[in-house]
Length: 156
Image (cartoon, rainbow, N blue to C red; front, top):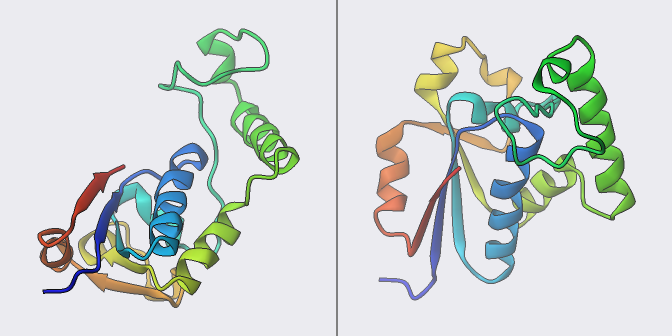
């Protein structure tokens, strides 16, 4: 049995705000010497698409700090999602937060194993050419093999 610590992450969300935690935690753990795997399933598959174009949505997220108070009905108006996504990306850039492509590349360089749920790939009719070359494919059993031996398992 290896002394190397292991971190298993299940990424299920495909919005901008939910894209950061798996990549930040995975790259940090890898830098600390952990062996890391991320299992991307359902909407989390958006995070391993070649065209990484995730959006921000405040709907259903009452804790999101808004620059000004805004009723939910206004947040649902056409164009608001794009505007909020742009505002958040600008704020992150201004604060020196790495963008998602950089974080994903850090994970790849740190040998974080990324697994796309094959069932979800089939369900949403993605092709392997839609996803980055560095992703592997497998089912829940593939992930459990690693997660069962992990020191930490996170569901996001």
